[in-house]
Length: 266
Image (tube, rainbow, N blue to C red; front, side, top):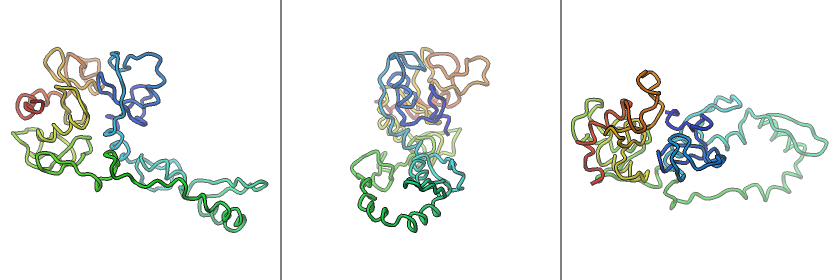
């Protein structure tokens, strides 16, 4: 799953993910900001970059391990807040001439017993940084706030970043169980339309079953441009981006683009 959100510059999961207008690959916002020219690192075309809110939501939901080895399961979106208060983190007292160090509970007990006056004096500032949730923000990571629909059915993001309504697929599908989702695989034409609409993809683009945007190359085949074909000696490891062999997910799009997904852009 993480492989779909690797920044091609730092080769880490994208931080504050942005998407390029040329090939729609994902990068760290800070990595692109450091580039000296306006050529895309992947396809070398000129581009503009916009925040990929969909990618940010998915990346934020990916599970990671705490750097302090506390054993608590957390997601990337919880990382910063957790690390501030992790029970295994060692805190240092900032009071003058006090060299106390200890984990969270010991540190709180130290403040309570050794510096109660300082705690009371600073208590009015404890909650200044709290900000209420803005339910009008369409990118708030809370499924209870906003529900999207496709063809009258509620849809949810799957682990691929595609939308799924869990209804029966329109048309035969030999690679799936015949249903749209619920978490991965092919989706129905209505959910595919939701995919391209939410991502604001250029006309003619589709999203393959792995969740990668893809478009027709000079061969008439669909290509996503990902480096997922390293075992195919006939390629340079990449699916396209404009010709040559394509990956399995894009080969499925080749077949479905003239049947199930034929009217997505009509």
